[in-house]
Length: 195
Image 1 (cartoon, helix red, strand yellow):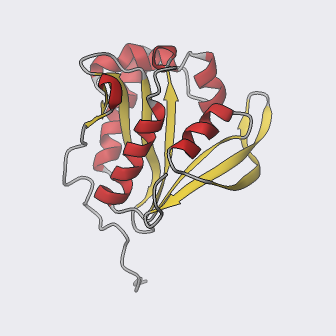
Image 2 (cartoon, helix red, strand yellow):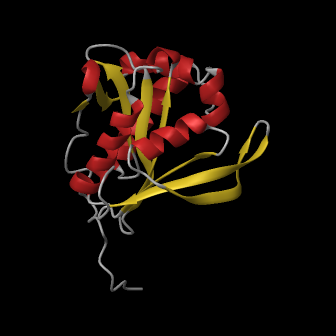
Image 3 (spheres, helix red, strand yellow):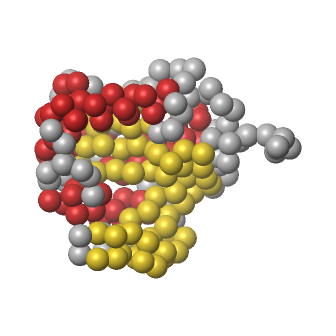
């Protein structure tokens, strides 16, 4: 079947360029994950807060290395863009990315978490703003969303402060260890004024 609607983002736009690094305030940066980040990824998958809100699998060092390789492959496959949040020259203290990419439809979802070493630095809001700007200006998406449990006010504050207004609540949308959680849906359009 031939679709008469052209894709919002042409296939090949992501893979045509290497995944960029972005500088953030306070000497922090976004960069692709690397083999040197395996210990931090293993730690993140064991962190109680990250496990509660993001539900990652427990990973061995070998599995963490495979996961990082898969994130690089997902860039090439135009499925996701996953960055490490790190001090310049230092180990990862968090993750931010955009996944569930639908280039033809022009949408994706930002996801994020921080290790204890990254919390309290004020890095997640500027990281979210930067990934959103990349998604709209460089990649060309039309709509970017953020979802989180309604019981996670920190994630709600990040989304709102980064310019992703609350659109509504999705009832019983995600199963956590303590049962079904309602989720907030935040989103921004390319045509929205940030902030």
